[in-house]
Length: 442
Image: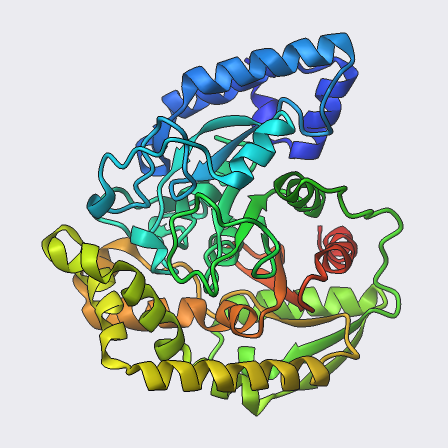
């Protein structure tokens, strides 16, 4: 067992397999043994897929031995959020409403990853039906933050993040509807990529609000995010060579700084200073249309989410965590007219927003304006739960509302992230900027 493998990037593990220094079977066994021995394993993994993992690792080892690897990540073990269908293995989306739900085939993105040789270690815990940015889930399990075990890890891809942060997976695959990849990535000092809506397949992904749902990786490096995006969509990875900050144009969105608390603000300011020292050119602006879009979050997100899950929720409401159930039910207060009008207005706002920011390489702001909240207080203080959940997602939700792609990278201050929002479908460009930023911030 080589414990050093547990903290290596996916790219470095892939290169080690390619050079013959790492055997995929030994690598997978190392991760499986680490999971079984870890004190938080049951709070991170909903279930392991050990037989599948060892079978996939064995096939990867044979390909490596014969010089027929499928790609850079062939043989690298990763985790999957428990809303990605796995054939013959329960996929419950963190909810007792879906207990023992057994898909008959893998989600499309999982099929794509398997076709490129990645090893599926298992399914990770998450916020119930993905409807919370905190990661608190008393129904199944609450994953702890890597920097504060008494705090939540962020949601809804809570286990996806902590599987990587605690060294129990080389990478994790999550989903992001309002920030669910980026919040847990930031709070656990990882890189998280929110892809543009429609870029990656949602076939076989348990929905929350399909109009906003996206798939994305949580990992250690920007290179890993680029490699995983390529695997998930079956394309070539972004070329990160020669990425530079010199002349990069960044717009600080001051809407995202309002109300930001001490540590997240300090982490962001420190990171921004270093990027400027690296050659980035910074401008600042507050855009009122962003606040207008944020004000429509209730009608846009909760209406669609409740319409998607109303029948299941109302058939067995007592099976749900009350805070999440009540958030879903809030969608019942809006009329169809209000929902359509909100979408019509949002489409107009998106056009205006992207015209205003078109001259910049990225819009930047703190990933989250708050630090990970305390688990016990969230469980016992309703007002605190509601307030912290809304604050956690305030900044990330901007990217979903505007239809942007987004990337969070660690600032160097624990549990704080620096978020960059790019134009729709401009992930390769954003990843190059992220690689340049990462080199400075690291």
